[in-house]
Image (cartoon, rainbow, N blue to C red; front, side, top):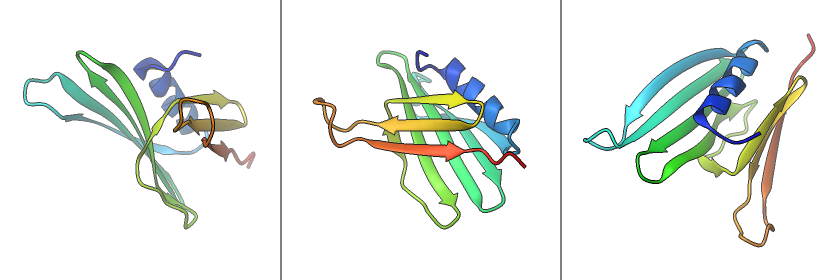
Length: 113
């Protein structure tokens, strides 16, 4: 799957079907409207995640995940290389080095309850 704002929306909608409450917002990062952040805050008990797609008129799109709270775990916002949503989980991936080493994968597994 190609990463895009549309795929981000599809992922957020998949999370909504798993019990997450979704808040959407847009944040202009440039006065001329050339850079806009599309923010998605997802909450459920003991969990708050923030996904963002930043659309830049010249540079395209970039994707971010901030773990505001996940049962006591938290992180600052970090850029995603990719993510995949599946019926039972979502895998978020970040690869900091061009040689493919040193990456981070955060997998969110859905409760079946």
